[in-house]
Image (cartoon, rainbow, N blue to C red; front, side):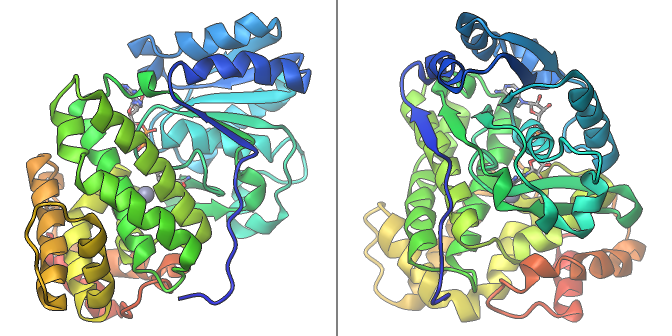
Length: 386
Ligand SMILES: NC(=O)c1ccc[n+]([C@@H]2O[C@H](COP(=O)([O-])OP(=O)(O)OC[C@H]3O[C@@H](n4cnc5c(N)ncnc54)[C@H](O)[C@@H]3O)[C@@H](O)[C@H]2O)c1
Ligand SMILES: [Zn+2]
């Protein structure tokens, strides 16, 4: 537990029915003349981009669209997008997409400078300064990137995903419009939903946990444990989908006040080396890492049971409650048909040493894990999912 903590947040968050309409007023109130809109081809194909586009258009401001971005991009492709953005200029960024689009846009918002780029921020994230205000519209109920100070990029030469953290990247405005996640394809809803689940439970069991992060982590966990399957399985379950959108946002707030731990740390090489989607790599590691952590996180898992279990089970011992939480995590990953091992990705045993070496580099998150993850422990965890 931290004894000093803070929570930095966006200036304003708009949720509820037709939340997107607020963008028109935001653009006008800021007196913006030229808007850069970030998205990706996947979002455009669904027709979803038409909603923020119409809201920006209604403001009367000039705008253009930057969409040349693949999921989970490396830092070089993000830099290319930012170079394009710098050349065309803008006094406001509106980004509509999942974590990949939002992270690229967040980096653009602090990189209207020729002095440094994404590569330099990887080594020295502290030098970023906000250059352009930013509006974020998440289209997955997952990363919480709409509210965190983090941007994650792949670094091919290290075979890792790396997080750049700077509070200047916290969004100015967030739009939580349920229409954006209504038709999320099940595999994307499942993987991104488990990412949000990992954010909540990792932050609640983090060395950096504190009263602010605990509030959002526990409430987010409660919403996810009781809605994720319905939100993914039933296309019409708008209440469950709304719950997931709010929970993902809470997960992002929990990250901002605290920090994720061993699951995210060990998952970064899986994304960097094998290009496994962020939510999927977290899902694969979620149960093994939580089982490893259980002896030291037992009381915290029992709290999670007390706050979030509504199945009438009335368990009494800390051990039983903690086991219930781990069983429930396992049940969710299996129900959602997310891989529980690296088998589908053909990762050979010969890669174990490299994985351990890469995972141990993610010190920023490993230090948050309540039970120390030694190289030997990391090796056992990776080996258990081969
Ligand atoms: N900044 C943070 O705090 C933070 C936290 C966690 C993860 N991340 C990063 O975010 C990235 C992952 O983001 P993500 O999980 O949101 O996925 P994503 O942004 O990579 O999108 C995955 C795919 O889903 C599609 N998609 C998105 N929304 C859709 C919708 N509503 N309907 C149909 N298709 C849709 C996209 O077009 C894309 O093809 C990773 O790079 C991860 O490391 C960032
Ligand atoms: Zn995550």
